[in-house]
Amino acid sequence: MFNQRNALFAGTLALVFGATVPLAQADEQNQNMEQQDHVEEQNQEEMTPENFADGASAINSGELNAAEMALDKDDISPDTRQLAERLQKDHTEVQDKLKSIAQNKDLDLSSTANMTALTGAPRLMVQDGSSFDASFADLQVEAHEEAVAFSKRASEMLDDAELKEFADEALPGLEEHLDMARACSRGDTDQASARHRLADMVRQPAYDQAWMTTKGVRA
Image 1: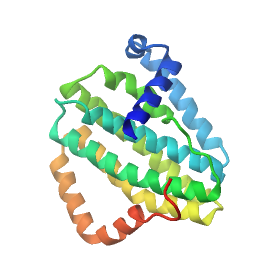
Image 2: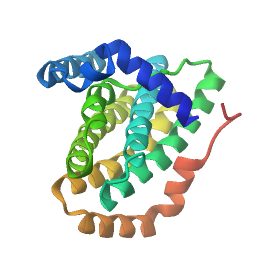
Image 3: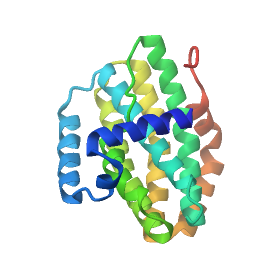
Image 4: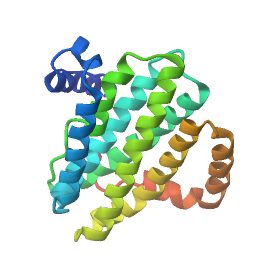
C-alpha cells in the first residue's frame, strides 16, 4: 500500500513542480504564497460531506507520505522517528475509518496529498540528519495546525452527523500530534512525552475506541 502511495505521490510532485532536480530548487517563497492561497480557498469553501471527505483524505495522505519519508532515512533523531511512527500509525487508522465511511456514503476521497505536504516534500527529499529533523518538525507543526483548524471547522459546520462525529473523534489525536511536533521543533520532547504518557493513562480507552473503531466494510 505504501509503495503504491509513494509512486502516486512522486508522480504528483513531478506534475506539480516539473522534475526531481528542480523540485529541490523551487522558490520557497512562491510555494508559501501558493500554500497560503490554497488554505484561504479551503477556509472559504462550503463544508459539504464531499469537501470534508476529500480534504481529510488529502491531510491523511500528506501525513503518511511525510512519515514514510522520515522512516526511510537512517540518520534521523529518535524523537523524529517516534513522531513519524506515531503519525504513520494514527493516520493509517484514521484513513481506514474514513475510507469505510466514504464507501458507505459513496463519497470520493482525494488520491493525492494536501498542498502543505506537496510544497514541503521537496525540501525533505534533499535533507538528512539534523537539517531533516528540523524541517520535518516545522512541517508537522504547520500541517497539524491546518489539520486541527480543518477538523474544528468541520465539527462546527458539517450537517452530516456521522462525519461530524468523525471530525470530533479525530481532533484529540491531531492536537496531540501538534503538541509532539511543537516539542520536536523546540527540542523539549521529554516534557511532551511525560504529558502524553499522563494523557494516555487518563483517556486511552476512549481514545482507542474513537480512533480504531471502524464502521461498515473496510475499503
